[in-house]
Image (tube, helix red, strand yellow):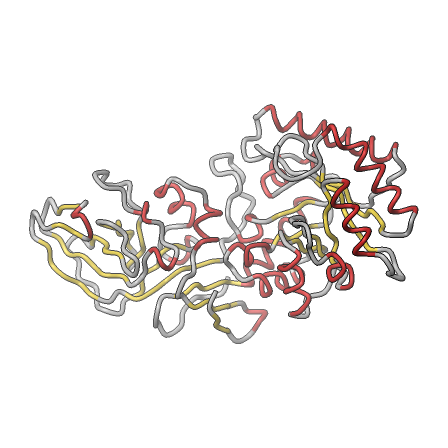
Length: 394
């Protein structure tokens, strides 16, 4: 994969588009069915437009976002191809979505009625998908409403308002492959498919599998799989022996800007929640919670549980409270030069901890670590296939 080397200035997010391409290719090969690359939330913090293009180059047949606004932004950037979104509110720009070739998801009869009004007067039917709730108890038509939703959807087809192109749902526990909810949800989805067909619907794309299910549950792949976190190279089910060769695409790095000595008893950062128990050296790194570093990255009173960064090939723990703009890390007596690269997290090859390491230290999931990072950091793209690098702010 591409190097992240470049003159080191302010803290930055480096995204390897070759990794995105390779991950998309690997997921597509693993699934054996079309890949829906999920690029919502600004590509999970990696950059929506650039990652969408890289995913398509890696073989993803579809793209997906959460909102219509995200999908329209992709179209405005010139990203073509099949595109699905699934979160709307009353008054959503359904007509604009249809005009841009974006497929929206309906959960209820009320949504379908609003869509029908928005699509009135079109010369070609819009393309929509239906989402059913099979046990996540989040978005999607509840089981008690399936029949009326399918009836309304079929009536809209007969009226020429739309074509129902897809039927889908979402797992609650796919990252726990032995959880009994997985069998129940897959069975419920099969029942939804049968009921939709009984109501005259013939969706061409039936999809249930997310990243974890794509890897762990072949029976759930149906006509396509939706992969989000795995596209960016992160394990969707840590601890489940799911290593299929995904490569993390994000490296967060910045400069070391100060080194100083501490004596026994010296307190570090706000509240002196860490006190030096030995003479040591510490480094100042100019990133903080304003840049998406969780304050939980240092846990008071629990040596060894703090998140770490990579400096000169060694992992160094954060000491004291994470501040808005900076963190302090323990160098254990070493004195690297000011300006030395600090790897906050990235792939193992970057020489620092991984996003999963940070997730475990902070008591969260790798999704949150990469999606929330940004703030004042610049974002830079690398990738052999792309040639030169570019920078922008998240």
